Length: 148
Image (cartoon, rainbow, N blue to C red; front, side):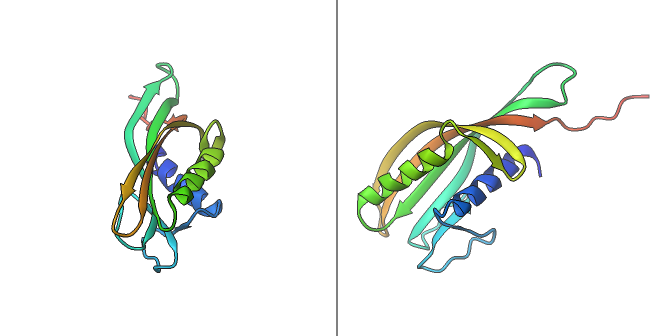
């Protein structure tokens, strides 16, 4: 798996491991579960956490380097039922898990940094929030065989 998909899937799995929700690749959850999904924000289940990539970037370190410094901006959008303070508590958990931490996301090592947070208001099924994070690590460059 290339760098960015590994980061997004690894983050979804890290949220699952931290007990913040349930991640399943098929995105099927019961109404009693808080689902964790990638690049979507379904209406069901009522509580959901969505992990999405935006503004992926990569910088070559040198002409001979076999890796590049890659920075992934990640949005974690979520909807919770109950009191709005529960959304703030989830943000605190995300902040404790990601900000200024070295994370191993399924074999990809990144450094996390908080960027922004905002409540989005109340939907039909709960209170919605968004947070944004920067995950930076070394991504392998594609193998190019030598000419000759």
